[in-house]
Length: 417
Image 1 (cartoon, helix red, strand yellow):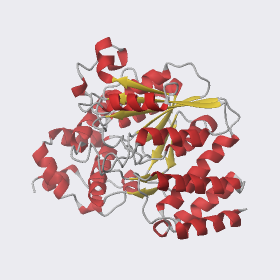
Image 2 (cartoon, helix red, strand yellow):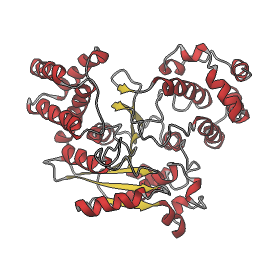
Image 3 (tube, one colour):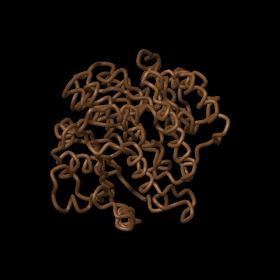
Image 4 (tube, helix red, strand yellow):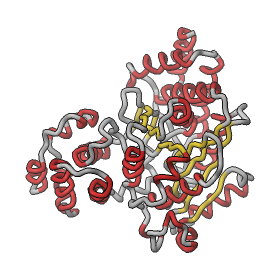
């Protein structure tokens, strides 16, 4: 059977485009069509894993579309084997997504992401009536009316039974407990809205309920959600998080953002030691058991971009060793990105320093790095980004679990320029 899968992979390797265009419905359909061919071969899960390993060993020689199709086949193969019932809720925030939510024929860089996310979930659960899903689009106070546009699409496509738009501004006005710390939407940068969506989804009484939050864009194909659900429902973890930094991860990401990301990872790893094996905290593809969401979300401190790390910390505090990492196929969607110019790393790190002091037992090293981060202003941070020590840039983030060779003193010298 593996030979048949290998043969299919060779055929698609030759005819797949070199790049995966997230604005192209045709490209995304090619990925699911190839996944369907792999599934039609009726391989065992071990066969798909063997194919994945073989392709990952030649990662850069294989089109991303082929890698993605194998991940999708793995995901759906898990779904087809589940005894059921189960329910998946998908949550994502929208802010200035008024162009990307449109098709590419309506806006340059448009991904038509709402309709395509729906299609991805329909594909994943096709033929399994006992496996259901719904979706929450949360408007984070968008001045361009992204939530309103989403509602128009929902009404036009008759998606109201499964897709719902929430407005953070309305939740604040109603005084909902999950957003009680917010006076207005300006105090939220994604985190407040995702937490509102997760909290709302968790209010449902569902068997085997998993809540996944993702990004508004199509960087992570939701057809991979079966991999997260498997980690929770089959393997017994409370959270399953997508990772772009595992050996079997496949990623297309821009170099400059990657370098800054290394600095961010090194610093937070020095502050927080309670989640030592996790490297990629910011991948917008994380799943949680609904019962865990009900415990960890209502009193969250962070309403901005560092909320991912707080969710992970609180999950581990609730039950140690309860998070599993899942390698994913991911492509950077930066044409209409709403965060490229925000560069939120410094405020995120300072928020993480606060979480460290609030939730965890402090250590001398952790406190030294937390104090360093708190001492930075934008000017020093900019100089540090332009002078990142080689001990950080010359290593891969996975090495930061053990490597702590760049000291606070060296970082201070880098800040001085």
